[in-house]
Length: 284
Image (cartoon, rainbow, N blue to C red; front, side):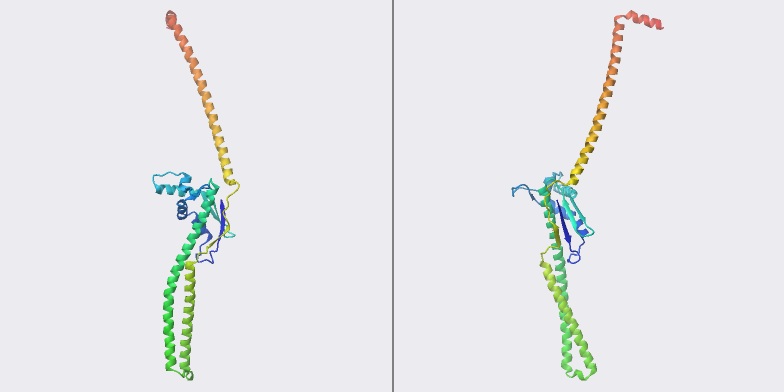
């Protein structure tokens, strides 16, 4: 199960790189949210299963069970970044294709929720900052406008004096600059308010998750190699065991033949005790 998405990191307020999102997909926070999610199984909408139940993990308590499920899920999730295109490829490999599809869909949904939450949090902080600065700028603009108004009231014929004309132009430029600052801050304030409630996704899904028709070829090859290696080691073990049994049987037969010979000799000596005494005497 795989999907591909792009990130407009240079134009969106989040400003995060594709590598950041690839790391986020395998982060403890996001994987933990997936483990806490109940997924539908089969056609019964009321039947659900968690990933801890699916992986059949064991642990002394719920904390260890959750961590074990996160570790198993981390092995099933992979994410990579294309250097040329900036696209992030993410895949989920489970024995159940339908469950893998649901996990990947939920993963993309959590990623989008993270982006929206991050963008709204930044927009809110920016709005509060601009709101305070806008109030200050408006107050500064009113003060400059009041100075210009007082100047005009005191000097109705300021054009007749070069000094007064210069002072008027200076106050006029100051008022114009303050007005531009207030206008720019007001525009930024409205944009921050819009960003705070905007719910458009930051990421663009290029290739939607799909259920594969055939199993993952890499997993099939891996299982084939594992089977070959297992068969090889079992064959070697069987050969060693057969050799061990053969040698054991041969050793037991040799020992048994020696035992039979010794027993026959002992019985013969018991039947002919004088023969045994003569043999001892001749030896002496």
